[in-house]
Image (cartoon, rainbow, N blue to C red):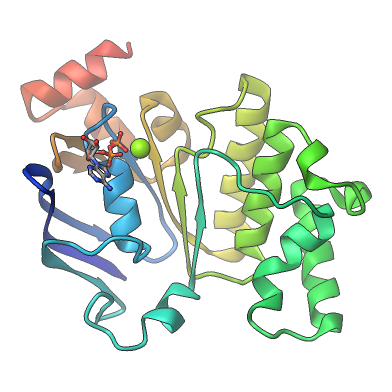
Length: 238
Ligand code: ADP
Ligand code: MG
């Protein structure tokens, strides 16, 4: 479904991505793991059309997303959740409805979908509360719900739990699993936390210095690291 081929990205003299190759399958949770500064966020931002690759291609269902003249419609099929939860100073309800309003969805459908999403994230009884008064974990759940109500085929999450405590992290991880299982949504999640990758992902890719040093199931990555750099990264966390 998503095919990333020979993607390079340079910022001035700094070559951040150096030949990224990856295929993500429909319905899978794929974790991009790797040390800080290895290029994980840059890769996600390229897939979400927030950055353009210096060279290489990203195909979604066969369409080169950066060459396409319908980038907006491609972008509308994706949701993105950032490390720092983005919430607006308005009600929880309106925060979740935001993505539907810009798509011109009618009020009845908006109410239906927002209420379903609030139920899913466990904040149905808080819809009138100002989202800025929520805890960090609750704000991140609101950000997830906002991305989810637009029914994305692909959900991108950049270190979604990096700022959260262990309990809130567990809640978000549980939410990620349920979204994948109940809606069949394909997810790409970046994390510097190898164990989170192991807990969540069907497959994961270890990014070292701007390219995947190894891609495989968590079990394969842990038991058969293919390079010394992967072994070092895996070993560090054990
Ligand atoms: P990670 O998410 O793995 O920590 P990033 O993709 O955020 O890594 O960053 C990789 C490298 O790219 C870092 O050295 C970072 O400073 C650099 N970088 C990221 N975005 C930009 C940008 N917009 N301009 C210049 N350098 C950038
Ligand atoms: Mg990052």
